[in-house]
Image 1 (tube, rainbow, N blue to C red):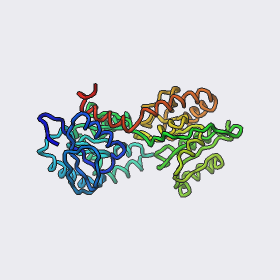
Image 2: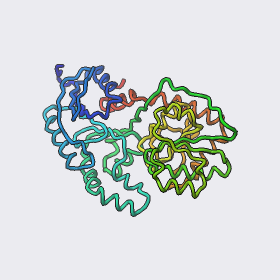
Image 3: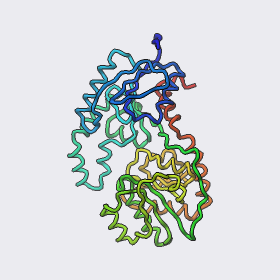
Image 4: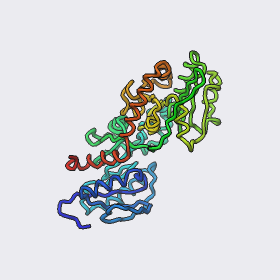
Length: 370
């Protein structure tokens, strides 16, 4: 492919993280005659779209190690120094000269949500090098894409990046066009709240347990279904359930191969995370017309219009009081809950990986967005 004078030109640092949307992005590049080079990092990849050239580098992608990041940074700079790229794009990390796409909170933010000063101190001492390194290294990057306003605030405050360098783009989700949306048949007074928690405490699991404890007094048949395979070995969970007498109101599930069955078993889904970059489980539930409730510290709140396509509760530490009120709103207002679920379904149809690719591309090349 020849390089026409002043032809737009970019490089993609490919490490496998962008498989969900790279084809959509490359299609846009081809459509608008943007020259694309690919730098493969420890991986091989077959592209069906036109690629100008492919280069390879070998690097240890250990993003917890500042020395490894600097080593990768030097390799990328060396291989790109004479290419005059408009942008170099990478996903799930960023370097000093790349437009990074970030899907997770900064290491400093993770320290801030530790439950007490002891844990905060341990976290700070354990990750001191990363915290200091990130503050000075990542501010050099020319552009950053993040998946929610929560991450934008995080990287502005904790990494010292100017807001104008950061663009929010909502991630797609595991879209199921053949989702079997079933009308639920319930026992009298039964109400099932669902949650997926690969990290119980940080995902707000204890907030949900507290809400179940509160609601049980008025709704003894209420039940929580929580996907969390490690519950049996979690002393805190077992003590809470025993002390609050909610063991019969909580069912823990292992990893689910059939999420279709899980979503269709729910009356609502909650995402009560202490700090969630986005929370794609929310858009998946919306795709099944399940009413959703998210915390004020969950990134997916950006797509929620309160009482229109879902509910937002104000998270205050580990209290489940406000979450319990929002769950009760759905219990007491089934017609409104159904209406919210229908609007939420329509919302979810617009949150795709194709749109994610478009939002990134047209932010980089706004002149083509017409």
